[in-house]
Amino acid sequence: MKKLPLGQPPISAYLFHAYPLSILAQEDRYLPWFYSTYIQLFLFPGEELKFYTHPYCTHHQIRHLYLQTCPLLEARSIERKTLAPTPSGLGVWIRDAIERKCYVQIDVDFFHLPNRPQYQRRHFIHEILVSGYDPVTQTFLCSGFDQRGQYTTTALPCAILERALAWTKEYHIQQALNSGERLSPWFAAAMEDRPSIFLYKYLRDQYCLLDLASMGEYLEDYLEERDTSARQHSLAKPRSGGTWGLGIYAALQQHLEEAKDGNASFSPIIWRILSEHKTTMQSRLAFLIQRGLISPHQTPTRQYQALANRVHSVRLALLRNRHSARPDTFSATIRTLAAIASEERKLLTMIRTLL
Image (tube, rainbow, N blue to C red; front, side, top):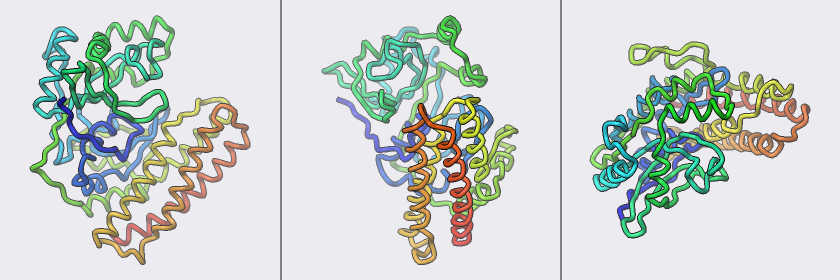
């Protein structure tokens, strides 16, 4: 069996983060780059909360390849139609890629994948990460979300994967229209560069350094609610209309106000990202203290841990009550978010002075 190593990704709310991060997380060598990068948040109306990681990530097209800026990862995008005309031929190509120590991220139809919410229920095109192949059992090792929303890696028979690969963009769009499914405003842009295949290769002979200057800039942008993409406009055209940094709390409060009044649907992924952001900041502080870059006596580690726990509790409460929450439940959460925003501003301002 050929099995490429994977670790537990620190960010798993979105698969386009989870897949490359799980490759990097096989060792701790990526942490200096990770802690220098995953700081800023942004939110556009009608969309989900996201991390800002590089100049292209505010746009919906995926051709830019997430995490291509990490020096430990070689990332390439290939048009699927240039590789193999049939799903079985594509399966052979994937096996060859794994033999070359390349992880393969590819779009499949989740209608055919067991242990997925869409299995035999609706056609849903999304990416999986293939990291291994067993010629004896004729299975691939594939990562993604299971029925419970947990990020996991399981064995998938080759025949099933080949069925899941047998889709076209035109067929998928027609299926969605025939079922009366409402397509998101960003759907066309997101599908523009699909189907594509991403290849990731872990570079063991490279290294990355902690960038304190970049960390400080991201943290300042977060505190000042500043559009980070505007500073990097020479690399990618900034997208206007977003909310940045600490400003996202007011946007989240508005989201809950609309949900309370029945004018918006509750979005669990927003609160998962918010919780992962606090967990990442908490582990970043521990990392900086361990490296001797900030003083444990001057750093409000316990206070930030308490804040992270509070955000986590808010997320769990919203998840428990999302189908039956009374308006006063949302109102209490809105007040809690305002207090969390005020506390985080105070703590991160203190931390910013230490860098």
